[in-house]
Structures are given as structure tokens and as C-alpha cells.
Length: 484
Image (cartoon, rainbow, N blue to C red):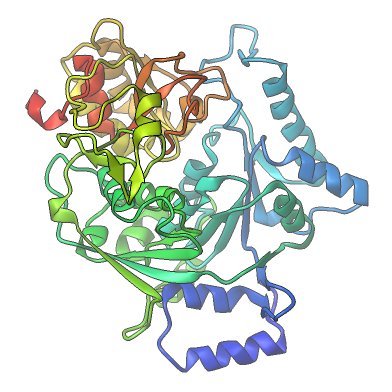
């Protein structure tokens, strides 16, 4: 990391004399130049994650200016958005949806080769969704600043990293300088008390929070998720939690690292090894908010009262407990327009609504714990007639792990399609789409109009709820199915 300027160093020294939040500690350690009345702060970036969709223009700008990538060793690239979830044919050709998708992938290969960036391509054993492979590789680490040209970069905050999405022009800026201009966000402590009940997932927890505070509830803020409920979550579950921080408008979401974090990272390819590992863990243990640290805002949620959640409208804030009635308004906003698109009526229940498509995957819910949760519902059951069901692992490593456990056989025996690692139907860029007017229950993160295909209607939910919809053909509470 570069050294802060004298002004930033002085400000950091003053800040260190008082209790600091986790965010403040990371910000202070990476502030190259403090903000003034005329310009934002300059923040050093430890890790730049790159994929095929938001990087081509940035690479072109570097070529135009005759600039190299300043720190290719701090970049990790993969392909995920436009990549097919179907395997290559006998000749090794991948079934891209169109030439644009194929060109995006080929262009990333060329750019990474020309600029010396390590790329995990479709032939790599480490290929997968960018926010899945970063932690898998051990590239995501506590205390790092991490950026990517993707909204859900906040996922990496589960490890105590300050991680956020950036735009294409900013992607080029980081490539050229390894720094970024940033306005300092405010801080919000999300205190999650109690424990989740059996049959309630981390996806339900974050959907409940967004339903409580709204899609603008975190605008201009960094969330720190705290409390008994958060500490009880696995790393996979913490990633789900942080992943959807952006859907509440937050810039990033953080969980302070602990023994679960260290156990997850130890031995991974890009994590420190040997003596360096011990030194890193010693540093990481200080990455907690100090006793007495002051947040700009505190939000409390009792996790023990959260029920399986499902969305009913056209943004993630339009969520409710699965057995609630569809509301006529939420956060003072009428739901009429959204309900008209979704073909629902205020006051009705979604239970029993016929489902056309089920998607289990995305950077929110495609990890091994998510697949195990879904498989528990699919086991010894069949996908209902007329329901198309895709199960898409988040990486090749997860796919291999799931197959070693026999999860793929459970999905296939049920009648679900077991696919290759890809963003797939979350953003529907690779040909995996929901048809016009079709209703999908999806473990992804966004339910905007047409997000999963033109005219598609999306209900966001956790893996168990999605799997239950697949085997019953309707929206239902997975807890009512009983065990197998």
C-alpha cells in the first residue's frame, strides 16, 4: 500500500486517539490524500476484480493513452456474466448466446494477455462468478479495499474488507493509478439480535432488513452487520448478507473478521502462507469496531422474529414474510404500479401462486451451503410438471464439491437442470431467461422489471423457498413440506 500524505497522516493520527469503527480503521489505512472542499479523498485499492462486461472500455482507454495497468499483480480477472451455463461441445466450442457475448469473452482474454493480468478463463479450474472466486482463492482478505465494475462487490465485506462496485470510467482509473476518488460515506451499525429460527436463511434475514428500511435506507452509508445473529452465520451466509447491502442503497456492507473468517481463508491459494499467515491473522484481529466507537446511525433487527421472506413487487424492498398478504403500500409508497406489472392484487396471499421458472444460483446464493439447502428439499421429490428449474453453481470449485457430495444427482433425479458456473439467469445476459409474463422464484438479488428477461416477473427468495416452489409448482413455505 502507498503511504498517506502528511495531511491524511495527521488526520489519521488524530482519529486514532478516539475509538474507531471498523470502517474508519480501513479508510484511514488506505487514504492517500484526504478530501478537501474541492475534491474527494484519494483511496488506495488493494484488489481490483475484473470481468468481461465492464472492462473493455477501460482497457481501450489505457491503450488510447499509452498507459499500462499500474499493478497487474493486484488484479484478478474472470468471465461470468456472458458465459454460457451449458458445457462446451465435443470440439471444445462453448454455446454463447450470440457473437457479442463471445466477443466480450475473447476481448477479456486479449486484454488480460496484453496487460499482464491473471485471468481465470473458461478452461480454468478456478473460473466462476467474480464474487464467488475472490473469496475461494483467498484473494479477498480482511482489511483490504476491493473494487469491481459490478454492483454486488459488497459481497466481500463478509471478510471485513471495504468492498464496493464502481463504474466503467472508475475501472479505468483504478487500472491506471491503483487509486480511486471517493467521498467518505457515513456509517450504520446493523444490530441483528437473537438467532434465526430453523428453516430461515441469511437470504431471509437480508430481505427482512431491506423490507424494514427500504431500498434507499442505506444511501451514502456503509453498513456494519453486528450482533449474535451475524456471529452465528457461516461465511457463505455472511456473503449473502453483505451481497445485498447495495439493494438497500448502501455503498458497502461489513462483518468484522473472526475465527470463522480465518478458518475459511487458511490455506487458500492467494492467502498468506506460513509465518506470513500468522502475521496476517495478528493484524486482522484488530479489525473490529472499538468499544465506544460512534456510528452515524443504528438499525436494530430481531433475527429470531424473521420468517421465510419473498418479494412481491419490482424492487428488493418490496418484500414480506411468505405467508403475509401483499400490501397496498410500503414505506409510504403505493405498490399499485408494481402490482400491475406483477399481476398481483393488494391484500392477496402469494401462497399457491403458480410458478413457471425456478432459478437457484447467482453471487447471492450459489455457494455450497446454498446448494445443500436446496438439495435437502429436492431429495426424493420431483420438479412439478411445467416448471423449468435451473441450478447453477457459482464456480467450478463449487460444482466439483457439489458433485463429490452427490448433490448434482439429487437435482437431476428431481428433474432440475444442473448447469456450469455462470451468472446465468440472475442478469439473463447469457441466454438463460424467464419468458414474457412467466413467474420465477429466484435466489438472485434483483427483481426489477425485465431483469430476468423481457416481461419476466421475479420473486426473490432463499434456496429452500425456491426449491419448494420447484417441487410443488406453486409459491409455498418450505417448512410445511416436512422432512424426507
